Amino acid sequence: MKGFILVISGPSGAGKSTLLKKLFKEFNDELYFSISSTTRKPREGEIHSKHYYFISKDEFEQGIKEDYFLEWAKVHENYYGTSLKNTIDALENGKIVIFDIDVQGFSIVKKKLADKIVSVFITTKNKEELKQRLIKRNTDTINALQKRLENASEEMKWIENYDYLIINDDLEDSYEKLRTILKAQKIKVQNQNLNQFQINWSKGD
Ligand code: ADP
Ligand code: 5GP
Image (tube, rainbow, N blue to C red; front, side):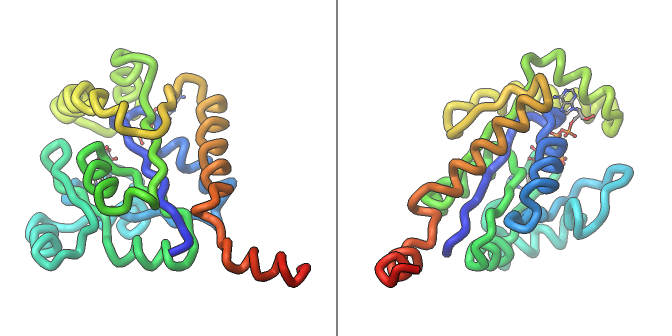
């Protein structure tokens, strides 16, 4: 498997999707976004098979039984999970696979695919800023927003398990950091097609 996985985690509202959108604009052909399945209801503008596979609780639980998921977790009272087959196929095609998953999901994939992963935790400079972004985004009820904020404090305890931390204050500055991480990961020896390079190198190609 030639590809690798870029895991992005962090509190809901920190700016993960915003930064990923920019990454896709720049590196589109090299990336594969892992579309998660979820039992959460779609937000306005969210499209089935693009942002998530929006499925029922029964379907999700069937998927768990049939080992469809590489990892899954319950976040804010909804199920979220990553397809095992799609991930393996994308890695075999040499893609950089993007996971936008929570800290529980990360701890599972880290155990299963440690040598294939680079991980980035993205957050705001403080909790108040996160609250303001969630209010401004206006996609959650007051209850859901409260739950996301409580969950955020729990997620912050996991930062030290990640390779990189981006405090997403200035968007351009944060994006520069994210693309630097991606570019560095691409030139790691373990992520390059060494055999072919070594053969060509001897032949003088
Ligand atoms: P996440 O995917 O982590 O839940 P989003 O990407 O949806 O977060 O961002 C949440 C809100 O914060 C959006 O309204 C987005 O436009 C805004 N946002 C993202 N990054 C920044 C930033 N650096 N400064 C100010 N607002 C931001
Ligand atoms: P949201 O409801 O805001 O789209 O996502 C809520 C949280 O679920 C985010 O922290 C997001 O990273 C996480 N999440 C999304 N997909 C998955 C997944 O497949 N697995 C896990 N474990 N978490 C996910």
